[in-house]
Length: 344
Image 1 (cartoon, rainbow, N blue to C red):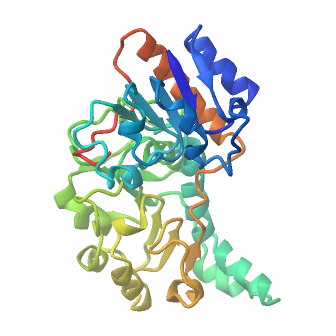
Image 2: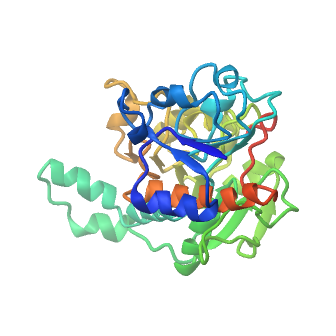
C-alpha cells in the first residue's frame, strides 16, 4: 500500500502511521528532492507520486485529483469542515472514500467556546479594550454587568464532537446544556473521539431540539453556541427570526462557519440590543475588510479562525488518521466518513 502525505511528517507521526500499517510505502515531501513544498497546504509538491498512491493524507486537494490518482481509494483531510472540498463536486459520484479529522480539535475548540463564554461573563473583553485605551474601568461596571456561568443555559446548535466537549466543560461550570441536531433522537455520536473527551453517548443535554425548533432553543439560551458545518441546509440557519427570539442578555458564539449565520441580521440584532454580544471565530468574508462594522463593535470578540490550530494539531490529526488506517488495512468500517450529498 502506498500512502502519500502532502505535508512533512515528523518522526513521531511517521511512527504512528507505520505502526498502524507495517510495511506501507509512506511518502512525504522530504522524499521529493526535486520539488520543495511552499507550505503544509502545498499539495502539488507530491504530484510525481499521485499516479500510484492508494491512500492520501492532505490539507488541500490537488487539481484534477481523480484523473491524476487513478488508484486512490481513500483520501483523508486534515480538517473537520470540508465544505471547501465538497463545493468542487469532485466527490459527488466518486468511489474514493473521503474522511475528515472530526474529533481531533474537540479539546482545543471546546476550550475556546468556554473561554468566549467566560470572557463575556466576566467582561474580560471590555477590560482588554479599556487596557488598549489606558482606561481604568470603575468597579461599578463589574457589579452591574459581570456574572457567573453557573446556572446559565448553553444552547448547542449542532452537537458533534466540538459541541460535546464544550458541553462537558460547561457542565463542570454548573451550566445547563441543551442541544439541537439534525436527528434529535440520535443522541450518540459514532465519530472519532479521544478518551475522556466530550459526550459521546449524548448524556449531558437536558433537552433536545430538531432544526425546525431553532428559534425555541435560541430563546432558552444564555449562550447560543454554533458549531454547524456549512451545507445547503445550514446556510443562514440563524437569522432575524431566531435573533428576535433571543434573550436580550444572550451571547452568541460561532466556531462553525460564518455563512451559517445571517451576518447582517446578527449585526442588526446587536445594534438594536436584541442580542447582547457575540464571539466570532468565523465570519464573512475571511479576513474581514478593515472598514467592516464588526471590528468596532464593543460587544463583539473577533478571532481569525484560530480556535482549532495548536502545537499538537497535526499530531492529533495523525492519530485520527492512524486509527482509520488500522481499520482500512483490516477491511473495517472507517470513522468520520464524509457524505458528499449530505455535506459533512
